Image (cartoon, rainbow over all chains, first blue to last red; front, side, top):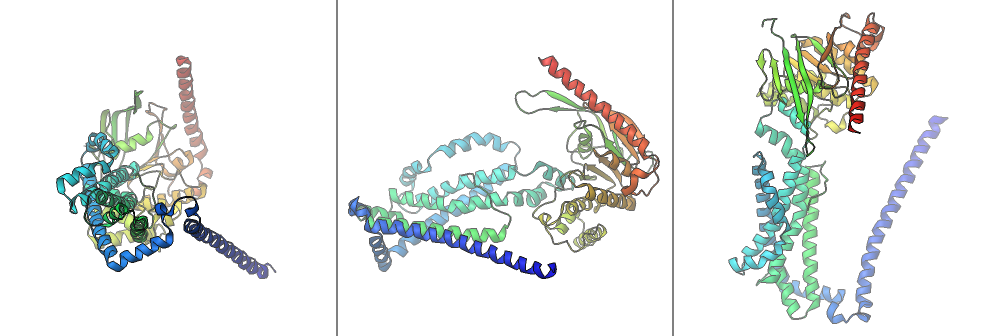
Length: 276
Length: 275
């Protein structure tokens, strides 16, 4: 008797569970879409009765500007410039951050000595340095790359140091007694233990590289998405300003999604908060 | 090797710890501790919490240095991390990012043993403790008992002659504990390493040890030494039915109870003194 009932009960439970999961998902997805659509509808049809549309434009106009930018090739060219600068700065920042952290960790008290300076540098709004770099290196890509690298470097550096220092002391002791020398300890214990923290920092900092690049472009430049935004704002072309913002956000989100996918594949156990 | 040289020996060892922070004051953990273990001997270390049993193992592993006295391994002073001993802790301390096999091979890898040799020895030990088929599993995919088996064979696989075990079965459930005690006894009888085994479980100490040292409460020193003359191999599942078990258990327990009471009176006096 029970042998007959049991499978039915299990199948029922599974069906009910699957249904509730489906409903849950549909509700959340529906909510996301509804929120986005209602904001856009409000912007398109109602915002004008509160604020002069000259200042805020409309989604349809923004889309039109976006198309116009794309048609002239302006979009692709400037997005390419910004992406190149941001990526270069990002790669430099990540490399210097990682290498610097590991060099420092091979010394005994290096981090303690450097810590107050790291914290001081942390408190400097990097943006404030942009005019300096522009004075030094002109209007070309260099100041953008440097600012992007600076935005990235410290986050990667601090998270790498923190990740390595958080490794369980007991684990390190046991592996030392097992016979690991310094280099082996680094390769077998410290690097993999710190990998999730490092990867998380490496992932989230691309957005910061983009911020650094665009800000430098906003201050002084002749090309790039920041330049497109500034140029449009000087002509009071609000729709194109928004178009530039949308493109930047889309680029950052795309890179983030791609890196998330890579991270999940390489470090399945990695999912950690970032000290930013 | 001359049988007169003990496998490990502590001679008049003192160990002081200085706490961290502003209220740091030195605390004596070990006071004039002397003991030795013969090659192939299974020695149990028991005593109240905080009496310095674990510190003795850390000294022999070279993870910490004595404040005074000497710590010897086969007559040689231990200076720096002692990679000639095996060191098994309460936490299994397996590397989460390495498979069972890769974890067991760790010590062989560090010792520069040829790769084919690693594999063969590691698989042999994995088979020996019944973990065959789980070589590719990661630690988080194994049960507590399986992880503990892995951490034990990780040490035995590189042929160490001294194994330091710090409450290795502490976090396990009662049934798994006894099963692992039986397996440890089997493994020990296979190669006969010297074992120093710290435990709070007196039944476990009796079941496994040739000799048991009872520590006083802090500052720890050896209060008494017991010889466990129960015949081997022992049936750890029914050790409490063995003749002689009860007397030994009572004697050990009354020693430790006295130490716990002494420690508590000390604490009370300290509190009253501070009023």
